[in-house]
Amino acid sequence: MTDFERLLHADGPNPEHAAALELYGRFVGDWDAGITAHGADGTKHTAPGEIHFGWVLEGRAVQDVWIIPRPAGSSAFPIAGNWYGTTLRVYDPTISAWRISWSDPARSVFRHQIGRPRGEDIVQEGTTEAGDLTRWSFVEITDDSFRWLGEVKPAAATDWRLVVDVRARRRKR
Image (cartoon, rainbow, N blue to C red; front, side):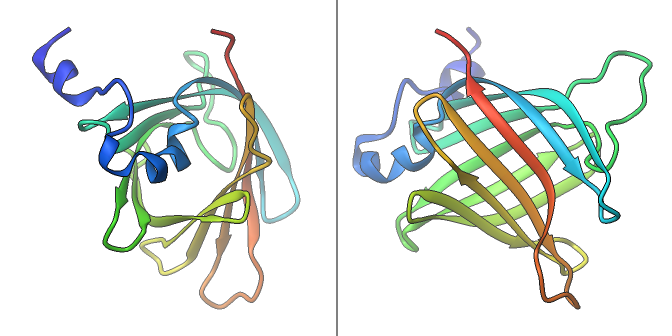
């Protein structure tokens, strides 16, 4: 392991805010996913994917990698595009919430959100560069599965529109 890897990765949550850190910490591990992209015109496209979560930065943050792979030479996944991006989720005790940054450099997609528990779910809210509202939610969470919903609400709209629906299952250890 290089010094970078050793200094980035952590074995578990930092004890200072361990209870709050478990909001996302419960996802640490490897997941297989089925992704459904929903077009504004009602079309749907599905693809397999994978998600990997880990503790980082002295256990003060959770980082993940989301991938919708495509075979070499195939076209991009319709509507949502191919993903090879990472999220850094950092608990901020000054606001009792999580500051979230998603980066997908291949697609030049960058999002900043605030995440909080909402009942049994986790809801992250932010805006796009164009000013549209975004809402990403973890729902139907169990020890071995979760559902992730990616929604958008254009500035002039009154309703949220589902863009991506991910159903993830933890890989057997």
